Image (tube, rainbow, N blue to C red; front, side, top):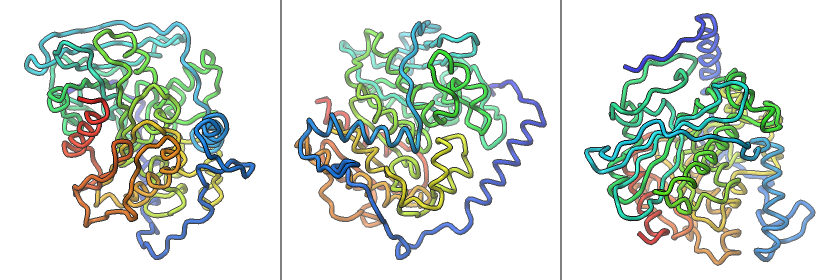
Length: 425
């Protein structure tokens, strides 16, 4: 087992009680009745705030796209700071015979310029052994780098693993089902990941020891000006920064991906950072791919109560009036255009509102059509009748699989296939 340093007992108890109370409250009075859904005031992705209709790519890129970005910055995720100066990379470990000789493994520490030496992130990168630069799937992990595989050479986390207010002891490979490394490597892709809590611990007080505080002077942004989702998205872009320096990586072919809350971060990173060539949202739900206005499953109020650190304080003002939110999640997906986007759901994951995830993808289609991109042609959400039957085009894809909230081999197989079609592999 991987030991992690402990927090004071009183603080740990406080986290546990707060999270337990929020979780219990959040599961009450949840709507799963489609007859009670009424989507009102859904923003048109091609209509500016001044009422001007966008009819071409030039006006989308110059007017409406920046306008939508600002709406999300002001009302949901917060401002995204740029890359700080004087980032340093140190190759801490390398092997030419990882995964039974199939892969090259690199472990890189990213040092951020701050007075506190704790401002750092550990990236683990697996690359296929081949005679060309590899495209790479980029994503954060939930439970430290050693959790993604039983590989004994994976270095331990710099920080404790905290979940639901508790400090965990993490078993190597504990979440390997979410990271089928050999399958990805066999397809000719690399994988780059880092522990999300290297960037910011995932609890209400995490901002105090995360980069929102450690780097506030270097980034010229105060902690309250952005949330944890924004901080994690920022971290994904810093992984992209490193990949651009690695001669074994084709950094023009990176796929930013994430599951659940880290799927929210992947979408925001993909919307902000156009260097990511393809974006994958795996069951990202409320605050991710799902339409907030549907009020189905998890809602704005529920997510802000359970996870008050994820979004801006201003987002809480929409807890009971999502119809007044000036930007809904289909607009977030529209920001990814014309790059390919894959959104996925699970039929038993009603909390994340699978239909709402599909509808966000569909309602973003008009922007993709500005670029003459094929979109989702299905008139209706496939639902249970369409289990394990991906639909869409080379630029917009969706599936709903059987099972629960998770990121499984089936999901990865679809993302690999989608990326290979786009990259010509």
